Length: 100
Image (cartoon, rainbow, N blue to C red):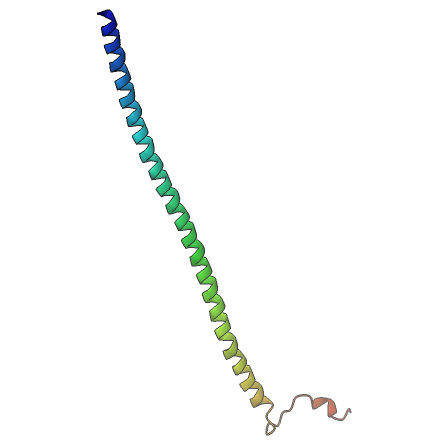
C-alpha cells in the first residue's frame, strides 16, 4: 500500500507542478504580447514623428519656393521703374560726368 500512496502523492505533486508551470507559461505569453504591443506602438510613434518632421520641412521648402518668385517679380518691377528710359536718374552715367 505504501507504494500506491507514494505514487498517488507523486502524481498529485506532478499535477500541481504542471498546473503551476502552465499558469506561468500563460502569464509569460500575455506579458510578451503586451511588450510586443508596446514596442510596436513605440516604433509607430517614432515613425509618425519622423513623418511629421519631414512634412514640416517640405512645407517650409514649399513656402520658401513660392515666396521666391514673388520676391523676384517685385524686384524686377522695382528695377524697371527705376531704370526706365523716361526716368531722370540713370545708374552708371555718373562716371561720365565731368571731373572738376
